[in-house]
Amino acid sequence: MRMSKGLFPTLKEAPKEAEIVSHKLMIRAGLMRKLASGIYTYLPLGYRVIRKIENIIREEMDRAGAQEVLLPALSPQELWEESGRWGIYGPELMRIKDRHDRFFGLGPTHEEVITDLVRREVKSYKQLPLTLYQIQTKFRDEIRPRFGMLRAREFHMKDAYSFDRNEKGLEKNYKRMYQTYQNIFNRCGLKYKAVKADTGPIGGDVSHEFMVLAKTGEDQIVYCKKCGYAANVNRAEYRRSQVAGRRSQIKEEPLEKVETPGMKSVEEVTSFLKCKPENLVKTLIYKVDGNPVAILIRGEHEVNERKLEKLLKAKEISLADEETIEKVTGGPLGFSGPVGLNPTASGGRIEIIADSDVVGMKNMISGANEKDYHLININLDRDFKADKILDIRSVIPGDLCPKCKIKLIFSRGIEVGHVFKLGTKYSKDLKATFLDEKGRERPLIMGCYGIGLDRIMAANIEQNHDENGIIWPSSIAPYQVLVLIVNNQDKKQIKIAEEVYNSLEKEGIEVLFDDRDLRAGAKFKDADLMGIPLRITIGNKAMKGKKIEIKIRKNNKVHEIDRKNLIPKIQSFLK
Ligand SMILES: [Zn+2]
Image 1 (cartoon, rainbow, N blue to C red):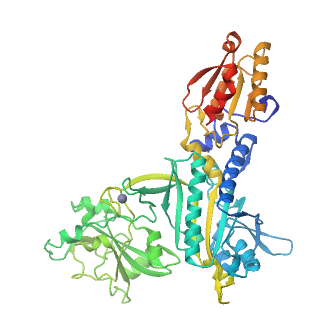
Image 2 (image 1 turned 180 degrees about the vertical axis):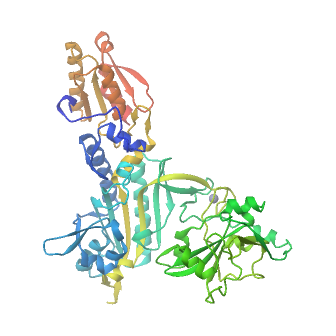
Image 3 (image 1 turned 120 degrees about the vertical axis):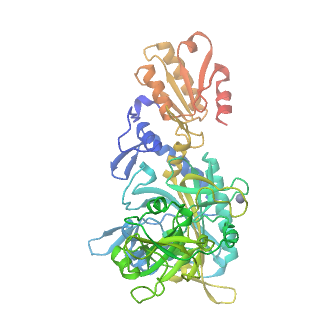
């Protein structure tokens, strides 16, 4: 491709709204342009990268025995009603109305559509197992689109769905997809971790996220260097501390009420009472599906709301408002404590759920359920009872691996893929069944598997760049080689460059030819910005000797190659 004949707009500056390096470089290198908030056009260079990623995914999915389909982006409201997600999905589901006042969803995911297809076409166990996939545009009405293609409102995904007759089949398919995903991400040149994850609005029992490690990632993950344990912090477990045993030796002191004027936060109370956060118990009033519940957690810990939601099998949890707090504890916000909560001051009863780390505490400090007062020397079982003791806190730095005795490592990640064991979640709701060997009607067992194409591209840039621009791995680079003429006025240079360009094209090597009438400096800058793996410079050296200069973008090393050895050298560099 001759750059003088195409659309390759590069920019010196990134737009102000671009906060992370991949967003900045995707705009600056001319991979994409913004149309509206969270909506982008891929320019020729960017679209080539998307197609490279698409081809790798397609090859690996086909190799795993999956079949490609193309489902419509528009799906009728009635189908979403069958799974209940028309209501549950909330404002992130883009909804449109046709001329007959019928509503449609613009698919953020396609469980309903594929389940509808399969319930119509698959009747017998003989047609199973079956895995179908598609590569398609998806929509999500993000409340705050940002980070370029990482949190866009229109994006590209590969989504696959497996159908099995039993759990064993699902397990096999899940493992196969897990392996396929590893192949895909390896081929795309990503450094990633597969972590245990939350199932979120997709649902199901087991899921793993594939996380590309990057400082700018929106997700936080923890992992163990020794055994390979890895999880999203939302899901992460840790080794239970041995504090409970040691603390049981400590003598219980008499309960005492102390004045703490205006002291509400952990910092205020602990500095005022000259104690440590681990001596204090936060009493947080939550609303769990509308009912108030008291959550006890140690001063330095945070409640993991997703863990709590899961353990309580709750649909909705949130911190209670001030009015509710006053009503159920008798005291204002900031002074809640467990003593006297069961039964409550108002005569009702409020459930107390204590985090497991609270159990070992002796002589704790917490609110007195009275303005400007705290209680000290509170002891579990003597002064109050916990209705439930659960592991509800988030992991914190210093926590140990649940399997080994070494500290978990905290890292940030970008989610590029997610695999779920759905089980019968959708097949039951949509009545997707098959007849087994004995003629019994059974629900299909499902799995679903997603990969974000744009995310692979952006995450790749987050991992592979320097101060001058992108550094593509050759597997997904838009072109393999860039041929650059230093002086566009020099006929001899033009002649050599044309010969080199044509010989590479003839060999089937993807080559970009910078024959633009620009200063050499501008061309060199653009070459680094666009990140093509190999750059061939045709300048004075090429004319004097028979040598051709090749620069490797990844390590900036320059090699001088005899012209006759050019093609085999290029081929070996690209390997
Ligand atoms: Zn470990």
